[in-house]
Image (cartoon, rainbow, N blue to C red; front, side, top):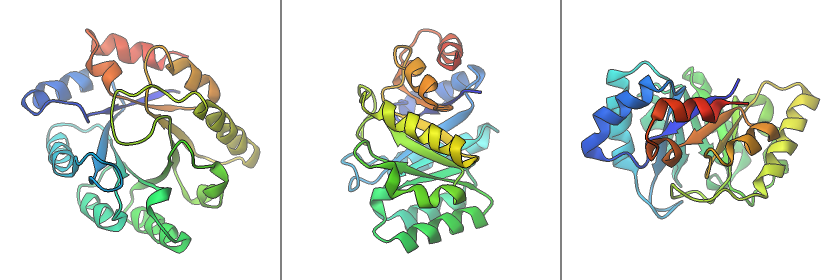
Length: 220
């Protein structure tokens, strides 16, 4: 089953209440929270995303899918643990030592929250395979992290296929989430490659009919 994690990155503050309601009624599966610190990536969304998360938690029961694009992963994990999201995903490239990655995985799981690792387009799957048995998902960035509305990097499709084949071979329970340039022109490519959670922002928010767009994005 294909699920949609709707990015709220480009939601305008003055329209947030209406937009969150419209996304939920459009039958999205998750609210996707893009947390950026202005260091790991240029954009800084930290305060706004915390505000949006707190607000969504107060009005919706939909799962919250937190994607940390930050240097100080530990501090941000601590901040979001208190908000009890469904999933916290952090970047492999932001953590210097493998033992620190294991500690972060354990910290998140100990709080009954699912955990994922994200990798940039140039990072190879081999670098994170040892962590697969301890994860709930791998988030493959199909664009360079930092901005919404980018074009999908075609070479990342092969990485999705490679991950899917490895999961099946090793009989792992691991979701494949993809983020970046996912729209009605690219959704079939990533679904056929093996992705089962699609992060979509602009493709939904700029459409005339959220519900219809979400339905079409999920079509196999």
